[in-house]
Image (cartoon, rainbow, N blue to C red; front, side):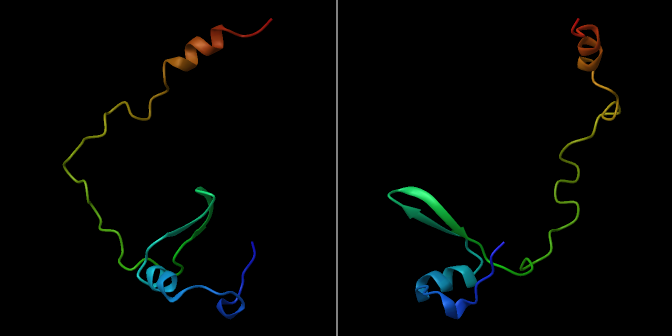
Length: 78
């Protein structure tokens, strides 16, 4: 990975303002994605714990082997 000092490149104040506010900036060349500028550092706020609590339940058999593995074992190549 290449790291470049901000003074080595020219970025418009508008782009810097977007990145500082936490936005992702997509750069296109001939209407095709060329590069992405992502804000660095830590997230602005920690993700809340239990965000979806009570919205779904994990089935009791969640960690059980899938039935598909049995059928795959039967189809071993010659």
